[in-house]
Length: 371
Image (cartoon, rainbow, N blue to C red; front, side):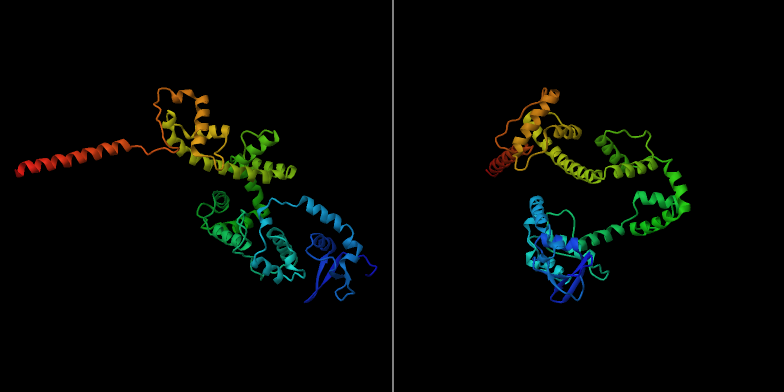
């Protein structure tokens, strides 16, 4: 190759020279075995061409990188067990990928390549990637799905936070009815330097929002810090920016905690109903939702596959230990099955017997009259 220092290379493809590409990116692709080492490259669009494995800058260290990738590869991802779908394979080909798509081992790495290619060769006319076989294990939608969700969101009414800004600058009758229009208007308002001072002055006089307090309270506990009291909206915004700059990992930690909290709240709502059905079998008075929540924090939620009666035994045993007065003087029902029987069964039987008795007596009376 030429003696000049080269930072970008061209690849030889069936459709002609492909690139240019940064040499570090090309080396990564060879290390991942997405491109074979004999792939021909050049530092000029018209050649001369050399195999990637013959160029020290590309090949040197590639084997070491490949070994590290194998050692640190996330093998627990469900998407690493999913093969490339036809839609993903076709998308990569349409993006001009000169390598063999079959060398991409799974959906996870194939999607990583798609994202990289779309960023390298940006095209505003290209439609967002959509795939009916988008991995179900991913909690986020495909790009096309995300766009649909965003369009729905933008057509929703303005949020309380947006209304606060709009009302401050434009008055309560601002006339904006969607989040999308509200966002555009707010961006223009806050981009005007003359609006910054009055808005910041306004924020310094109003309390922090519930969302701000919720987030900062959790972060403060995690960092071992205290929050100003009273906490105003402007202070909260500054603290959020400051703490995120010092500890960027707080953002992902917070959303992970929120997801776990939402899952726990769902568990509580289900268990509250179960506890109400099972309490009579354990001779327990009615249990409040707050007490159920606190008890679940102590013993944990019902395990996957754990029988309901086994879980309830654990639950009421701990509840008896913590609050024995809930069980005093309350009749214990016996049960013959592992699930509670509906209330009112005896009443139904009694009513049925009385109706039957009435029919028999009526029939006897009719016979007496006929005689």
